[in-house]
Image (cartoon, rainbow, N blue to C red):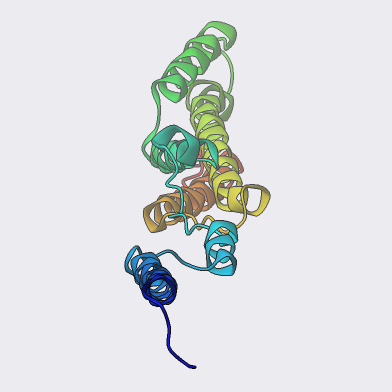
Length: 199
């Protein structure tokens, strides 16, 4: 008949209980794995291979200074040019000494029996021409230095504009040099402030 003994009923009950416990353990293990937040392997690899964003490196002061000229030399040249231009117009101690020397030489080499025109030329004319000559030298130097300063950026580092005050001082030196050179030539040739007539 379909009756089961106590031993057979106990064996079936134990097998069903064991199967239920295995299912519960498997379910808990899956939930535990989900709680730990483990990510799939492909996500981990993609994060490891992703490039890290780096902030742009800031240059040290020494490196920034070594990239190009600082403009100190150009500024000094512009100031020198303007100073030479002023000296060419106002006179220098070299011009004064040269004029005094020419006056002394004229007095020593000109006899008292020489004509008045010759004495004037030897004592005054040569001295004035010496002053004009030295003024022209300083004016030419101012002009050349100013032109070099203005042309320097064309041969320097690209993209580094010249400071406005450097340009202004250099242009001032060039202008004063041109005026001083013009006046020196006019005076040396006796076109401007020539010697008075002896007659």
